[in-house]
Amino acid sequence: MKKLLLSLIVVMAAMTASAQKFALVDMEYILKNVPAYERANEQLNQISKKWEGEVEAILQEVETMYKKYQSESVFLSDAQKQKTEETIMQKEKEASDLKKKYFSNEGELFKKRQSLMTPIQDEIYNAVKDICDQKGYQLVLDRASGGSIIYASPKIDISDDVLTKLGYAH
Image (cartoon, rainbow, N blue to C red; front, side):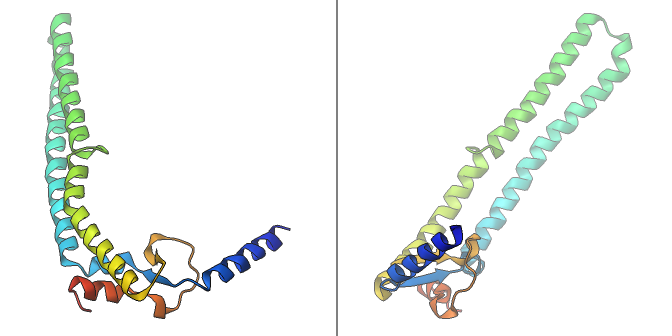
């Protein structure tokens, strides 16, 4: 029964689709051929490594403080122990806060990625839209997005057209 229903849906979709024009793009392919995207990725990687280094430096400092505390704790009064533990915990919180500031969903890296990638994505979207308007496509699917496209004719792949429109003739 499920197979019959699925077959009926596919046939109906095919009948509906016959009046429409479709195209495919491969966003991975397009992005690999856009130098601005590669530069933006490299810049993001450098920033990320720098910030990871800052967080790691604080965590190393925490580890050093903790080892020192462990070796000296037998000589400290309860008040000194408590003060040292609070200092260590404050330093751990500082590392955690910095990590959150840089790497959370709304952190500095996310904002930087948005500022660098949005113009590139907008340019690609506008190129795809222009090609669709010129050639009458109603739907463009991304081959690279992991959808369940089993086969598609290379004739409907407009990735090279997009690159040409962007000025990166391939």
